[in-house]
Length: 114
Image 1 (cartoon, rainbow, N blue to C red):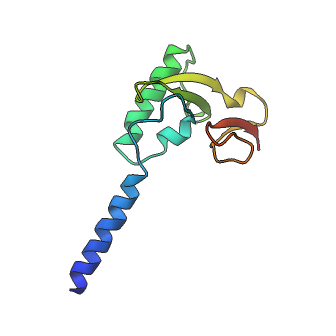
Image 2: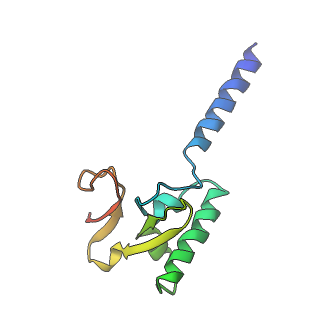
């Protein structure tokens, strides 16, 4: 009984951690690159490829880690591809902030001074 309870709790914890990962995005919502990339595998690799493709299409090369994580991307209506919006670090002192930051609108991620 004790072993099965521990195994069940472990499975719930494992599934709970996986629930935070996602391989599709909310159409038309704007995300910080790090919100997409900083996930467990295989989603990390998937979103890195998508972020890099959006940066390349927008002519934002060479691609750097800063450009990947500090840029904002709009989720396209197919819910898997992205469109580059802007690079937050191009405004001195600004960083990409998640949508739940009080100064953002609660819907989209935004660039704000820290």
